[in-house]
Length: 325
Image 1 (cartoon, rainbow, N blue to C red):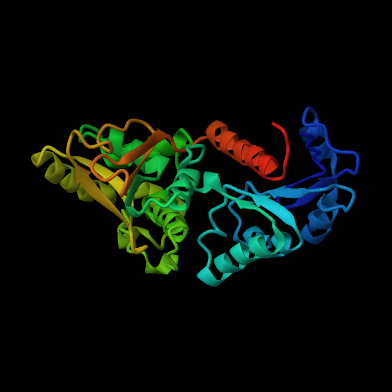
Image 2 (cartoon, rainbow, N blue to C red):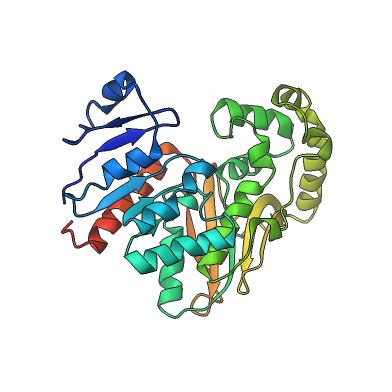
């Protein structure tokens, strides 16, 4: 299997090379590049006709970039990405992506959009394609929220843990992006669409942990007023512990494709309650795994595991295309 890196880009500029870019010195070369980003030129360069296959890997979180996927796929450029924006765009665009793959043979691989490097998407695809019937999917789908609620025990204010998580790089630059539950909601939509659901993100009931009074203010003011969240979480924690249960933020998908993202409480023997750190835990309840769900568990965030998942998709694509790995 031979892989030639012919282009690298960020949101401002790009580096293109017909001879290929050495992974050992790409950073130095990229920093010296003064070529402004032009996505049309970038895609044209990547898809040069003297190569049998072309691939673009999008490691951004850009909605704009995701909007180019359909055109790339229609031009027989494969796409691999951890970016959730395309998979959770309006269903009409999602269908356009799937139709482009069917009509051209292009591949759109997005394992790392849910669970980072965990084999969540492909496990679900295998269940569906081998004839199993999925009744329900439940998952701790946010590494940030997993860490916050597995760490919180009432002895330290929740706001303090949020600040710690931000300092450790667990949260988005604006922690409200995590605390809103939107990330979990988007991931449930991706899973639901694997089951044939035509759901939109706007259709998903998402419980935000951010009080309305803190939603429309600047980041600095939000961080200063973070303590306003504490009474809400403390009360929920006390209610859960009075029942011998533990708080976890969970996304669910039922067999009809209905989704939800919310804070819930679970008994001590439940797989969610036994999770630690940034672990993601995903449960599949199916005909085959009805009494004892199929459980996938492991780190759901981090550069190394996500990069590993992206590389796994590269190898999977290569296998599809006939490479001997």
